[in-house]
Length: 311
Image (cartoon, rainbow, N blue to C red; front, side, top):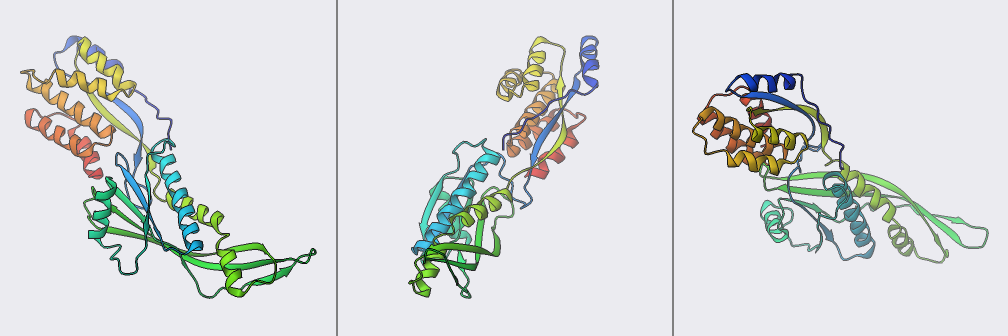
C-alpha cells in the first residue's frame, strides 16, 4: 500500500551548515523515515519482482475457486507493494497428478518462465468429503440448499533472493457456510456441485487474507547522510529531503574522482544509504565496503547492521 512517508531533519542539521562553513570536514544530517520491514510471514518482497501462479485441477468448482482466490491474492500484493498498479502477473497452470510440484527444481523452472524474483504458487483447493447438505423449502415451492463445506489451501513460495534458498509452505483449513437456490430435484452430487460453484466470495476473502500475510510491516528509522560545505553537496541535501534518490546519486557519482579519501568515503557511504532506501541492499553493501576501505567514518556500523538485516 502506498504510504505517506514523512521526513524530519534532526537537530544536528542546523549545526551542520555552520560546521561546514568553518571546517573542511564533513557534517552529518539525519533523515527520519518510515520504512518497510519484512511481513509477518517472514517473506520480504521490497524491491523485488513478483509473479503468482495458480493450479487448475480442471474441475469447474475447483477452477472457479482457484481463479477467484488467486485474483484477490494478486490484488492485495499490488495494493501493498505497487500502489495498486497492475504489476504482479498472474498465470494459470494445469494441475497434473504426476507433476513434481512443489519441489525446488520445479519452482525454479517456473520462476525462470515467469521472469520474476519471487514466485507464489497457489494450489487448487482440497474440499473435505464430509459435506452434509440441508434442503430448506421456500414458500414458492423451490428450495435453498445449504452446507458447511470444509476445505484447505496450500500456498508455496520461492524467493530466489532469499538466503534460505528453499520452498516455503503456508497452509490453512476452514469451512465455509454456503447456500444457493435450487429446484429441489437435484441429486446430492448435483447439489454439492452447485454449492461449491457458489464459493467465489469465500475464495476472494481467502485470497485477500492470504495476501495480507505478506504485506510489509512499517516502522520509523533514522538514516544518516554526510555533507560538505559546497553548493553541489547542498543540492544533494535537497534531493534527499525530497526522496529524489537518482538525482542525488548522480551528483555523488560525479564527485567520486576526488583525491580526498575522507570525502570519497562520505560519497560512497551516501550512495550506500541511498541504495538502502531504495531496497537495493546488495548494492548498498558493496558501496559501504568501498567506503570502509577509503576512510573510517562514524555511523558506518549502524548502516551496515541495517543492510545486513535485509540480506
